[in-house]
Length: 84
Image (cartoon, rainbow, N blue to C red; front, side):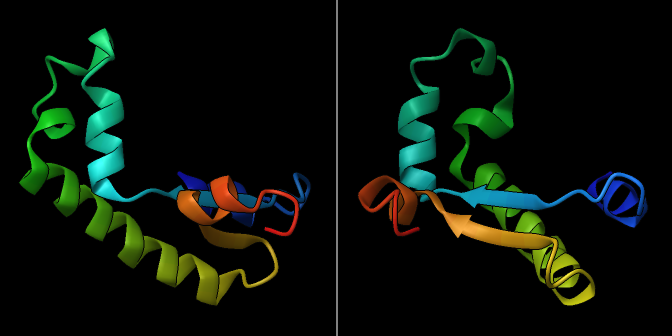
């Protein structure tokens, strides 16, 4: 879906993939009712598999759209929002 949006030159879209440490993701999700029924919200092996898949897709998108796609670690943004 993101690739289709990036291909649309009229949109001139830029995308940031925000990546967070899976331990923090799982901790946050424990307190969200919407996430409880979905196994990939509370099973570490599924969450990590999803994150690996996202990473592989992000690497391809970064190569194809170097000026319009970036991945950013949540922890870096949280620690230093102005410089990040």
